[in-house]
Length: 427
Image (cartoon, rainbow, N blue to C red; front, side):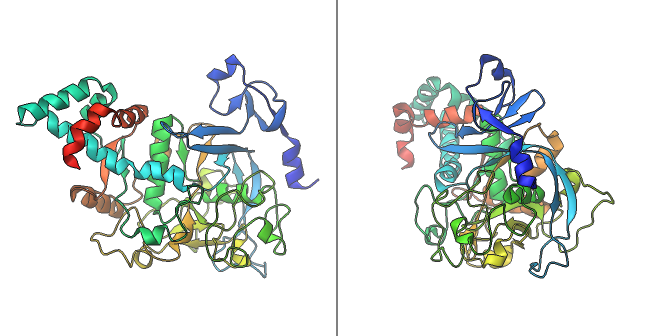
C-alpha cells in the first residue's frame, strides 16, 4: 500500500464535539468523529477546525496533518533536481495543523490595520495628560466607558510581549498589481512581517500559530507522495492543481480555485511561493542520525540574509513547482524600489515579491517558550535595528503595541462614537 493510502487509512471522521472536549486542545475531540478527516492522537482525534480572526468574520481553515517519517529533499542522482534542492534525509515530524489555503488579503489587512489602531491608542493616551482641560476631560470620559482601551494604554508594550505593525504601503500599485480581491493571496510581506502576523494571531487567539518549518511544509505538500509532485499530481496535470507559468496568465488567483492535494490543501504549489522559517544555505550541517527529529531538521536563522521560499509561484516553470524545489529571498534586490532609509522591515517593492506569500501552521503540542520565540521575534540584530529605527522615526513608520486577547476588544472600542468623536481632531 502506498504511503498516502497508509496515512489516509488512519483517518476517521469528524462529529460534533461533546462538552468534555472543551478541556482538550483546540482542534482535538475525544470521540471518534462520524464524518470528515481526523487523525487519532493521544487523548482523542485531531480534526479540521476554523479560526476566526478576533473581532472579525474572517476565517482561516486549519487541516490536521499526521505525524510520520518521510524523505526530506531529493537525491543528487535525480536528473530533474533543481539547483538549490536539499540532499535527501529522513525526518520524523509530530502531528500539526496547517492552513487549508494561503493567507489571503482579507486576513492580512487586519494585521495591517494595527498601525492605525496603535496610533489611535497613543493619541488617546497623550490626550489624557493634555494641558487643555476640556481635551483631557473628553479623553477621560471616553476611556471611562472603554475598559479595554484603558487597559491597552496602560500597558507598556515591549518587543517581547508586543507586536510591531507594518508601515503603510509605499507603492500600493506594486503590492496590489493583481487587484485587491479579499480572496487573493497576500503578498510582498517580508519574513519578519510574516512572523509578526503569526505572533499577533497567536497572542490574540491564545494559540501558537507560526510559519512552518521547511520540513513541515514539504511533508504537507507531498501529502504522502515519494515522487517529485504530490500524490496524484504530475507535470502533465499540474495545471489542475497549481497556478504556474503555463496556466496563471502571469498573475495570482483567488485561493482554493484549483484541486487540493491528497490531504485537502490548496495551492501548495504555484500561485505564491510560501515562507518557511528556515534560513537558506546551500550547505547545511546535519546531525549524524539515521532519522532527524523535528528540531534537528530546522536550519535556524543566524543572520539577516536569505530565507527559504517553497512551492513556486504564478511565474514558475513546472520544474520549480516540485515539492523539493526551493528558492530564497534577496532583500537588497527585492527592496531596490524602496526610497526609504532604512529600508522597510515589513515590505518588499520589486518582482518577484508579488508572488511571495505565506501559510500558517500550529503544532499539536505547545512548543517550549524559547523555541516559539524563534518563530515570532527578531531573527537577527540587524532586523531588530531596522525595526527599532523605523518605529523611532515617528508617525506612519511602523508601530509597537500590545498583543493579547484584550487588544481585539480595544480595537472594537476604538469604533465607538465617543472615541471617534474624541479622535476627530486627528483627521
